[in-house]
Image (spheres, rainbow, N blue to C red):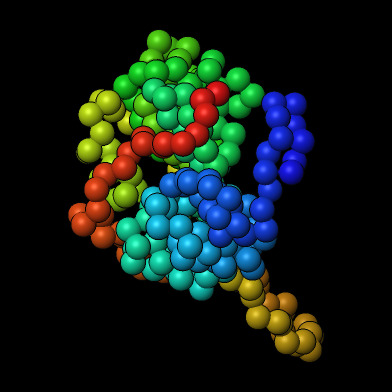
Length: 233
């Protein structure tokens, strides 16, 4: 049991123990090291039949594990956000999960309105919402997609959900490119002389991203902005 100023919070060694104690939930948040995130997602999906969404805060997961996570989500009809995500916030229902979107005072930054926000940066998600509020605009659902190499809830998933959300009339999308440098091979020692000037440095090469495979969203029911079982801010 974890003691806090708002009361005691039960702590369990596994998801199964929490379910056995009577708790029910449809969203899971993964705060695990990169090497353990895949197993955490697998446990959530395996033991909780009510699961609808998973938020992965973990960053720098391997591409191999990220692909397995995506396959598990597709096979079980579960939306996965992340990795390296600060989660999602719903200004209409005053709910946020998976991170700290809205900062210390989300009620000031996240005002009920008609604009959805999609950004790979959690800080920029809050910043955009604040700028919109200062201009007199409110928000609906705010999504921090994350900045890992493999982004599970990407633009195609967001566009599908947006088209099925009657509250949202416009969207602000922001993203910063994340290039992964390829490690340069070790240089061989070359005998230098006046006849052989030093070799020039070659431009750094960057890895090509894996081909993107969107979710089979057409076979799923839209779940944009629906978060049950969580307290408001």
